[in-house]
Structures are given as structure tokens and as C-alpha cells.
Length: 387
Image (cartoon, rainbow, N blue to C red):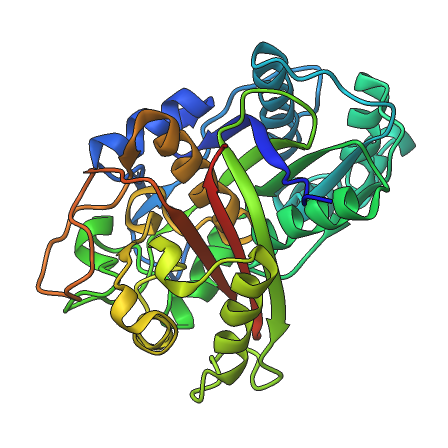
């Protein structure tokens, strides 16, 4: 029996570029970062900061919070897109939400504005299970619904979970959404203190993955929704396989021997049934930090060797969207697949010989998407143009 391969057939996205997947694609295709300058953004960071925040918008009736509005908007757009591409939901539609910090702005208001006092109905919207439950109710879906969390690797983990549900026959279709709208002054301040977040200059100056002079990552937000199915519809990309591992080394640092990262990539290729020389692109985690550049450069040399896939990172453009990072980067790649363009960031300094320079015509082939989550969470998704 031939293996049934799930496809992403619907995409919704709310990012620093604005509301809608179209805004995301127009933004990354332009090669211009989403971040804008915010003045007086909290104490103890810097006076002015460059951030790619999701702007206000969405349905007022969803919630007072940007988080719930962005999440529900991304899901609705993905479902509407999937319908337009011929998707017909099966009897069992599941929902998996990749999330790390949750609705930090609403929790902040709960403690600092409301002093812990709210109507029960307003309190319940703080719980991470509430948004997914109300979405299931809205669409009449009856499959499993749950949250997954694996720091910056969460978007990949959500899609791998969706594929596992489909492979196991638990569901007929899955809506997968990843949300991170966590750029409060406090969170920005701590990433700057960690030496990873860079907010005092334009993103292309700060975040230079695989290039000289990179200082770390620009900071971003996003909510990205996908409809994943094995049913007939016009797909963007096929999800061929994936894998997950953990360094079990340090709460922040990548294990310098890279053993678990390498195993994760090898396992993902094996799960997808592809060879290293089948791979055309490495859609890198690429946050612009030294330790991640070293790890992913090792992937290029040790796993791919003479295969020489083109490497690129979306983070200099979208910002590092934390728990939604992998999802926004896969969405950009999927939209690019339909357009025949790899949405690489422009090079600004000398760098790795395989690093793509700006939007590049796409060749047919497989893409490997690693995500290296803080704390040692490794995940890899392997995908290809929909067949």
C-alpha cells in the first residue's frame, strides 16, 4: 500500500506585516523587514525599539485581546482558503494549537489592571484551552483539540502532531495553528538581557544568519493557521515526514556536540523516505545567534555534504516569532512554493557560500525545516511542492 501524504491546503497568517497571508507574502517577497520603530517601549530596554508586532485588528467580538483575535483570525482565514481550494472536511476534524507563553497581555491586565477580579466569563478566556474550545464550537469540529508547547520549536511540533494524528487514523483533517503575541516590555527586556534579542537597530543590521557581524535576532509576533489533510484539494506543500529530539544539555545553550540535532535531521529524512541529495533547500532556524549558526552550518556540512542545498532564513524579515516561528517560516515557504519563489532575506555581509541572497526563483525539490527551540527542543519537518 502506498503511503498517503498529508498536504497543507489552507493558510492563514497575521504577522508584523499585517493581517492576512497576503500581507505576509508581500512582505517577505519585498525583502523588507516587518519591524517598525516603537518609541518609549518600557523601561530598562532602550528608549526606542525595533519590533515586528502584530497590529490591532480582527473581530471585536472574539476578545479584547490581540492574542485571541489573531489566533481566531488565522484559523478562519486558513479554513476559508482551504474551502476555496476544494477541501471538504471529514467527520473528525482535530485542532492542535502550538503556543508557549499564551495571552501574556491579557494576564498582565488581569493582575495589574483588574487586580485579579473579573467576571467568570472574562476569567475563562485566559485559560489556554478556551480559545481552541470556542473555535471547535464555532466550526462544529469534533476531533481532538489540544495545545502543544516546545519553545521556539512549537510550530514544527504542531505540524508533526497533526501528521501523527492523520497517520494513526485518529482524524480525517487537522487545523494547526501557532500563536505568539508576547512582545510585552518585560519579555523584550529579558531576551535583550539574554544577549539574543536585538532591538536597538534595524533587523537586517542586527540579524544576519550565516553572515559576518550578526548580533542575534530581531523580535516578532505571529499567529499562523494551516489546514492539513489527506483528502483531495489543491495543496501548497506536502508534509513528507518529521522528527523531534531533545539535547538534554542546558536551559539556553545548544549542546556543542550537536549530536541530537544531527540525529533529528537524519531521523526526519528517514521518516520522509528521502536522501540528503534529494534536498534543494534548508529553510533554517536561522536566528542569527552564533551557536545556532554553528549548529546549522554543521548540518550543511555533516548531513548534506556534497548535496549542497540552498540555505536561507526568514527571521531577518519576520522577526523571531518565538512559539510561532517555525509556522510563519513554513507559511512563507509554502506561499513561495505556489509563487515559484524562495523568500530568502537579502544578504548584507560576507557569509556562507550556500546562503541565498534575497527572493530567488525556486527549483523543484524538497525542503528541510529545522527548528532549534531554547532548552534543547529540536524538531525537523520535511516538505515538498504538493504532488
